[in-house]
Length: 400
Image 1 (cartoon, helix red, strand yellow):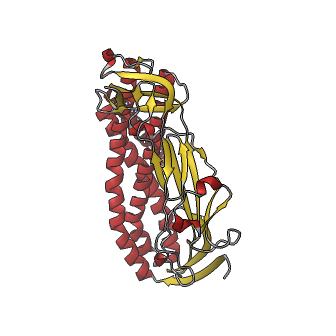
Image 2 (cartoon, one colour):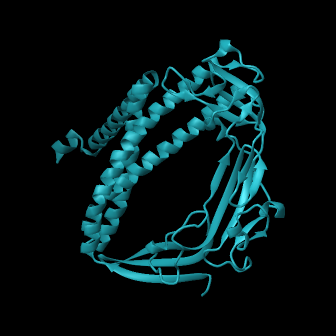
Image 3 (cartoon, helix red, strand yellow):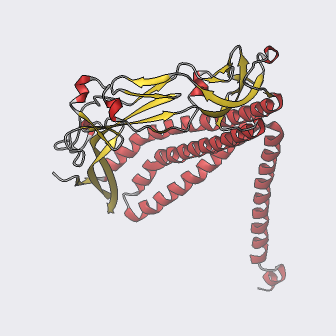
């Protein structure tokens, strides 16, 4: 059997089938709208609370040296820089791999079949022909791929589960000088590097694996022929996060750190790799929040657009009984859904701004209303002037 296979299916959808599907899609479209509008409103509030909380934190943060905690700073927002260290040796007893570090990550991949579907539509009068292509290829994946959902499962069966899964081993205690870092901050420490597996490590793996696993390319290979992998074969690699210099901003809580609660309801708990001063850390956090705000705005607007498209889809399908009319109306429905999504999105964001940023939101709303009124007056004035120019003079009327 070849590594890649392709199947093509051609199905025909009648006008009634398309109308039935479009009507069913209305419920999904309404669900998208119900999700999108609250998401847009909530996102603006979240952005304001987080931005103001970070501004509050930037003005209240206290720089400290991590080698000694001052009881006077208890409960305050502090900034500290230094090496994050641990004395622990992390070990994966299953494969006998060990390393001194903050985090040891076992990465397991299994060779499996993967299905990719590609669909195109062609119109034939009021009918629509759907051409679906199913591509099957073998890939390495860290997650099990369920072959039961494949259109053509026969000959493309995958194991139901992975016999060994990826796993992370974390140090129980990581310190920044005299400060014990909480798990939430330890999880943010990056800089992972590959950890080659040695033959000495392999001596410590469980006996039931010793006969099946072999060292290949700095990791384990579980299968018959590494050069010709078969479905179900595994490869296991490791990465380790070693002690490194970090900078943190959080609330001093005894001998450890905790999230700092701001007056806006947001929390502050920051970590960056390297020696970074507090102003830079807050600037980076602000930039990250702005990026997240625009991403969520994009998600909300996309949900609005596709939701409206699904709601109005039956109209285009009904008109498609006359093919030319259906094509024109489909274009009109798409354009209308896009315009309406932009208007509803902007209106929702504007209302949220009034609720969360009244000093900015109200002037914007007034300005937008003035612009709309001005455009209407301009259009009315032009149409009135044009009407007067087209009308014959009174003298001319009296002489005819």
